[in-house]
Length: 618
Image 1 (cartoon, rainbow, N blue to C red):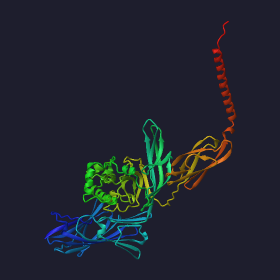
Image 2 (image 1 turned 60 degrees about the horizontal axis):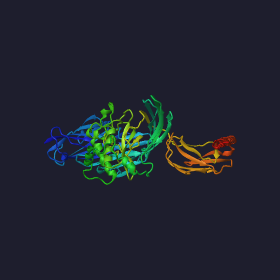
Image 3 (image 1 turned 30 degrees about the vertical axis):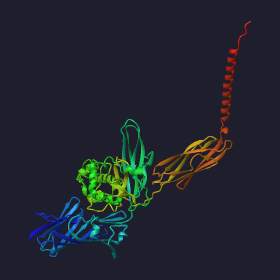
Image 4 (image 1 turned 90 degrees about the horizontal axis):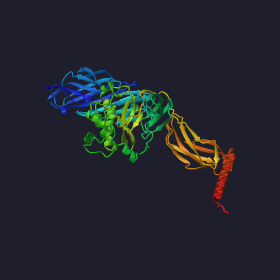
């Protein structure tokens, strides 16, 4: 009888010392329990049944690789007692090797053993939120059955999201139990969230320079609002000229830089992250926007033959009809194709782009995962773009950050016609052992900048400090409306002015209506205006054209502006032009000048007439 060494990578993959045997020589059945404690540590117990499918071999060793770097208290027993255990850390995984006390030979014979260990990587408490993430069953191997039971303390509260939906739920005393089966865990792992939102405080520092010989206007990107994020900007020092919103939805703070000068800027605020979209109503893309968000671009070479070939491989079984299904296949390809290269973080990070990443799959960080997903999605006709920001991570092995000078983490999102923009993170699924970041997202990603219409870099803070907030999220816009008109209007002359709307608050003023009303003064132009969104520290201006109805009365007029439900009044004094104090002198001067001109012309006419008079000769 030959001896067989079996190794399970992320639960199952077969290896032997000298001869490689087919994976179907053995099958396994798992009954796994993940018991999360009040402090977040997880006690794992796996009862494993190894069944021999042939009479040629028997198993003497078994190995399992766990997607965790914080494994302790490892022990194992079989029917003969404690088993020899060997634990070794390999990158962001921990491999546990077991030696059976006795070998069982014969077709249909089984060996039953139990593996126990603890890990701090499966459950995480961030602020008021608990998140539990268990990796999926990897592809390959003859897994006959796999049953998983997750239990958590009742003190975690009711779950706000569970994916996939458990086969059963129950409660016993102070614990909640969720049971899952094999077919649920093949495509994705288990993700459970206890809490619907999370608040982070941030301080960002920027340094911008003007090396040219001429003054320039430069901008920095501030954390924006999205359908999954609200932002408070409580401080910008020094204050910008204005803050505007670009076509991607970024908040851009603008500064004037003198020649050969620089500026240090500090931005402080908070971000509230939501598990579900704030609104199920979303703006559909116009044809122009769709063309821009599926175009070929630097780093997103969607027309490159290598990208086309990869897309053909992805859709070799046929192209799905639904956008989400197409994006899922692309996502799975990127996760399995690229390998995260932690060594790149120690050097000068250079952005490779999609094609280079495809041709060098073992040299990838988050930028390459993101660029490849975007390029493949665009090649498939799916609008896709890049999100740059911060991923809150307590284990940089499982959920790494790039930590480059101006980019902490990058992840993509794609546009679904039924749900709007959907964020995914192929990098973290790749590095966390298969935690699903496609079907369900988390509360740890903070967006600092959005890149869709262009892949070029936006200026993001080079010094970032992010922490979980213990304060309430109190965002409120505060509008000031300035009606820029002279205090005195002279009738019946037309008068041009400006309405300037300034947001002195710390959060976005959403789109609203502006209405104009006047007393005894005519408005030339529309009396109702659609206001666009105004970010904190931002302003917008609109022209105002007025004319008084007559020219002989003096009265006090009012210009009323109603914006976002608030009314602002500008009082003006209307006077006839003839009552203007210097007017008589001006009129006298005009009459005198006119008389002088008339007299001069008359004198010239008489003189010329005399010259033409014929002389009489005697």
